[in-house]
Length: 366
Image 1 (cartoon, rainbow, N blue to C red):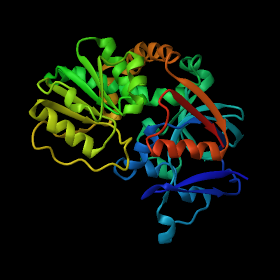
Image 2: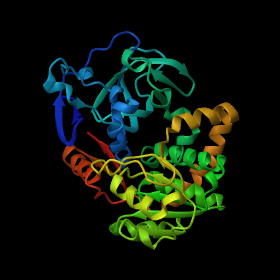
Image 3: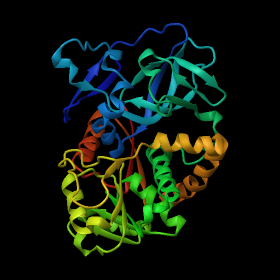
């Protein structure tokens, strides 16, 4: 019997596994078997910002027959992940059984989808509650029709969604001449989005790239070669406070950020908030000096560049950084494929606790 993971929206450590009957398809719908999909710290950020940006809305618990009309059920949500799926049943003649997809999915065994806006490369899900949501997260690629999936297939769900954000952060900062900064300081430097950003900045070569990370991850961060300098959260004061600094915050820990502001003060010229890997850390406070934090929403920068470069130009510019980054991963990332709930939940809890090994990428299937 198919099953799905539910997460308590106010306490991510509280999860439930729900079994359900297979859905019956209506005309135009398809059923897919989900997996493998990736689990990263970015999935925690999706939940932290789930109400603010709308990530909880993509996959409703009611899709699986869970009644949401009582207070005890309203607390539950479904964490979205990036991964693959295969069509197992189809009432849509344009998407036959056996078609392989890549995109945004729930942590579940199956999903019913309604393909609309079909193109040679994919479609969007036309289920009623998804049509108003951002198309970046509502688009699905036919894997066998997109040459970009010919190589590095295991790395796609682990790194590609994060790297696209990394590419856009680098592009945004460079487009703004780094707001006059002499260095970019990345918090949670071992996270895959930070690594991708550091990689892009390092390739650009015209600004110092500095990382902040935990003591247990410092050696790993240094060994990637993406950072010019790496310090831990306990050694922030070893950084030169007189350097004009643009901060890229993947951690979202208010205590750490307060220490960064105390150290650099007015020399923080920009603070780009991206993630919340430290999901249970203190909330950020308004800084007494230095530029305030501004949330970065990658789809906005993508929309701007697609308008300027066109879809083909955007894909080419992204690929120019993405493919070398994939090549670099062989030196610092080990991919693990796992099947089953116990192993997945163990890794999930490691990400919640900030204890996941940054040198590993995780692919799962229920």
